[in-house]
Length: 190
Image (cartoon, rainbow, N blue to C red; front, top):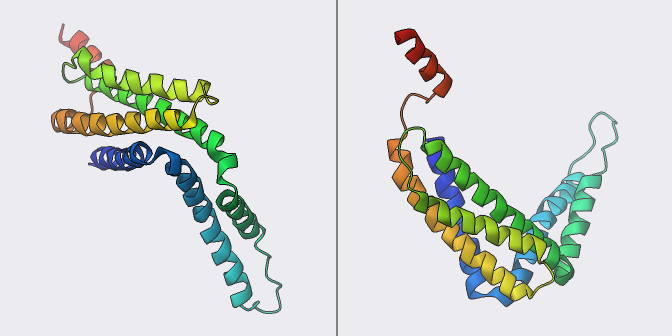
């Protein structure tokens, strides 16, 4: 059950990111960096407010929230200068696509233990893997084009993940497949 939920969650996240990157490639880059900056700002602000809002107990001095200040400053840097982090973000998204392609290929290989998996199912994960590698090794290319490619790849990944989830999760055996134990059992029977 857990793997089905994670597959569905991965598919939804990839679909949302892909849709944003395809529909608004110019603005998406900056908005993604700004969103990440806000995600760093919030815990920084909360920790600093918590430091000043609470009293020290029993005369023990409170520890200053250095991590909170660091998170706040890094978040501000991301929000104020999103263009600086665009190339870094492209590396991260390319790396995520590479991981997604490898994960799908590994899932298909695992599914071969209990059912036949047609070679056509390997095409999409291979293309996702290639798109991630292109994004990683060609970061100086046109950023909008690269993010468009990453966006389309994310959409394809989301659809592919959903198809694989629907097709293979229903046929997963209830008992874990152990190829070594099956071979040993077959040798004992002989």
